[in-house]
Length: 390
Image 1 (cartoon, rainbow, N blue to C red):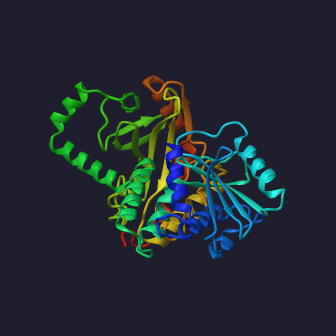
Image 2: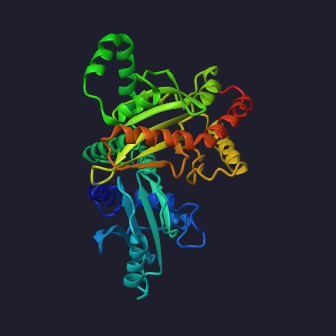
Image 3: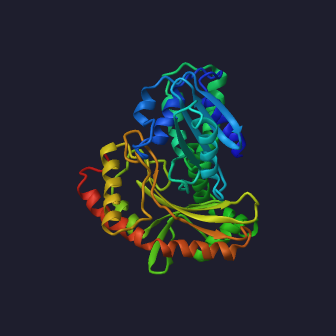
């Protein structure tokens, strides 16, 4: 999967390719990736956004580096390590940086090298010289730079890019098609509950679903409450490897409010959501249960910015280092902003629902301080924001 995604990304980044984008997507990607990361290193995000990168050469799998970008005119080198659904190992990031420095920088052909760490799950790079960026951000860049109508694309190129965008949106939890399918599924369940309950009860269940049922007690139904330790949660939805919910302390604050514009078709329809997701390692046998919390696509930018800043401030005041947003999370145009770090529990066997259930319980107990901190600022956030629906 990494090879396929690197190939498509390399095509989009190349100014000489047939898509007709020139260096528009390349500059937007590099500037966003490096934005706010170690301002002492060159080139900066500002320099990139103003540079001419039409001479850029894209190399794939050069000395095992996923993507290497060379700009001879500017004497810049960018190396991208792509982790689509796998983890970094050993000292590979340092090794790749050393290879580039020895081969291209030491002989004066190029002056500056910047590392970029691309992930699906917002994993932190082990080498601080790499600036992180995730696939959710790539989705937003494609929407803003490629499919906004600012660039004339052929019908074939546009269709291909839209298909690719939907693939990575679904993988990163941003697919509106997936959201609509989930809404339809919930409506079908409400209309045909007895029949579907029978099918679920006697049909095939995934180990992840069985684990979630063990945690919540019996069947999983939208709106049902369940307890873990001293905290109560409200179920939103579940599928074969993803279980979404809200802490009751968050849900109670939101439930008396009017429509949250921009979030009407997003998860539970409110500006915050939590979910658990089972991911598999490359060996297919082991994996991780991950806990996510995310601020959603509020149409009111000032309101969205205020919510993110309130969460940042309470985390700083309480020294909760596992709450951390990526750079630019509250910028205008940003829609989806995750904020939990070190948020996974490893399972040796992804088909062992007892192991998965233990991992779920462990995460929900472990993150109760962060959940409580966010709950404490929500009343002030809503009360101080005026008419939240507008």
